[in-house]
Image 1: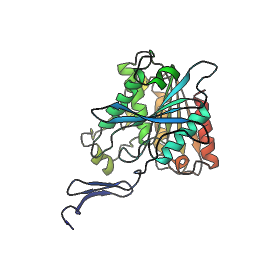
Image 2: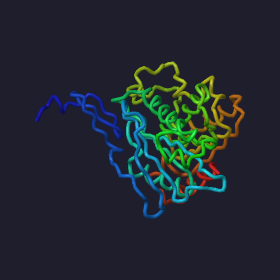
Image 3: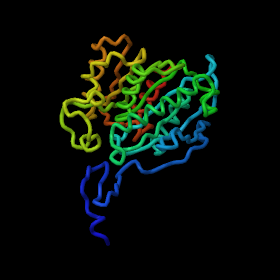
Length: 301
């Protein structure tokens, strides 16, 4: 066996291992499940390519009932978590979660598959997520490349949401939308589930994944200290935290900072006592997970 190729040069337990020959071995989030029609809910899903050059893609979901009293359905752009370095929309836990959101909320969902660090170091995930948001927005006049979005998505009711690192990305997409604009799109709300933001302490994993990060405080990470926080481009924000989550206090800090920033929207926070990080993905049938799902879909009504 080639001892050179098996030499480990970097390892972050629970996330990935880097070998001297450049190989990366991920410890989680590598499973995939295909799209299709869910037998229980009738939700349909399919995979779409957003950018051929970068291979940024997404999984698109359509509920069994494709109309509402308002005509077309709200569009949710969902961004998965995984510390910017593991997981994808194609993992079983994310596929099942989004499928349930689509079914319970009767919404169209675009679940974004951004490129992962460290092969594609941050800030690439931010740019990929923005590319996905722009691609979705290109359908606002009903003439985009994807019929499901042209025919069924209401671009006057667009929501951004994500968990953990995906919540960080979603927040930053709401800021970027305020700065760059999205023609024909109205952002109706932002849902941040167990969001990952910085706490002004050195983080060796983040330092490795984001080598160009401003160590004095990058606003994409230290969101509560961002002077542009008040420009979040939506009228309401829901922050969800879990009582035993090590990121709980960071979610609370973001919530308080947003309310004090001069932002003119409405912010709410919900805590699941006794639960840990992304518990709803790991135990979707649990009482608190069911409650989280109901709170999530109610926010989009």
